[in-house]
Amino acid sequence: MVLTGAGISAESGLATFRGPDGLWEWHRVEDVATPEAFVRNPALVHRYYDARRAQLNEVEPNAAHIAIARLDLEWPGEILLVTQNVDDLHERAGAKRLIHIHGENRKAWCLACDARVPWHGPMGQAASCPSCGTVGRLRPDIVWFGEMPYQMERIEDALQRCDLFVSIGTSGAVYPAAGYVQTARYCGARTVEINLEPSLGSAFFDESRIGPAGELVPTWVDELLTG
Ligand code: BJW
Image (tube, rainbow, N blue to C red; front, side):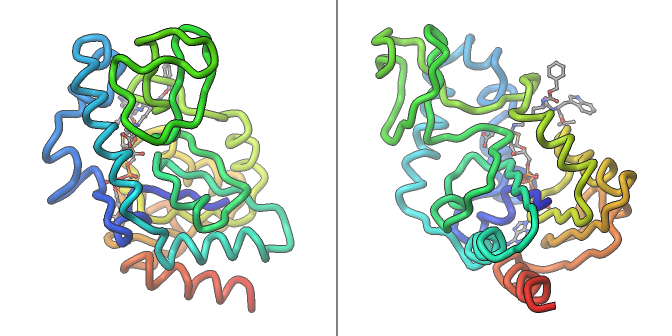
């Protein structure tokens, strides 16, 4: 099982959340990434996600996304790729067996009819649902703080069965993803992290490879597939 976070998209030009120049340096989590924020100030939340959606037109998958897609294609056994990222760089690189646990910014969720639909331009408050036609009830299909991440049961099952768990480009600050390493390890998996710095859960990894994902992930995938 491979878990990825914002660090894997950093070399494509997308900001991470924590640390210098991270998104949380410029935006308060409580203002943009909670359901309460959306009720209080939907225009602000839409502006934030509209801007990040527009930025997706300007970036491309990097060597780490491409290596993970190659692993997905060539790995002879089962594999599950779980990303916390709401960008679409894994699928644009060709990954197939992929779950977005925190949702996708190129999708809208209609609060009137519950449909989830592809969405590429700005959303704003005046957009109408392509499925039911209701105006003003769309939100970005993003899992905010306090909301339930997607496909938790499928992931729990994979964590209990996997024999290798690899975490790439995530600080280990946000649950439930931050706890996956402990479950996988407890259930017998070998655990590897690839990150620019040791993550908060670093002690739970059997091996830490410290450096940029764009360099380290292709090497690691090569080793795994040839070795
Ligand atoms: C590189 C690199 C390079 C840089 N190469 N590396 C107290 C204890 C435990 C849990 C909680 C608690 N209080 C509240 C909670 C739960 C809460 C939580 O975890 N809070 C924490 C802050 C403590 N979690 C939730 O609410 C989740 N839901 C949940 O738990 O539901 C259960 C439930 C619900 C209801 C009732 C009952 C139970 C939902 C979490 C949703 C997170 N959403 C966000 C924003 C939305 C998406 C978006 O806008 O894009 O998701 S938060 C943000 O953090 C985003 C990310 O997916 C997520 C993780 O961040 P990530 O990816 O790790 O990024 P960074 O920036 O933190 O780290 C990047 C790393 O990359 C760094 O280490 C760099 O060094 C590295 N890096 N360049 C390699 N080139």
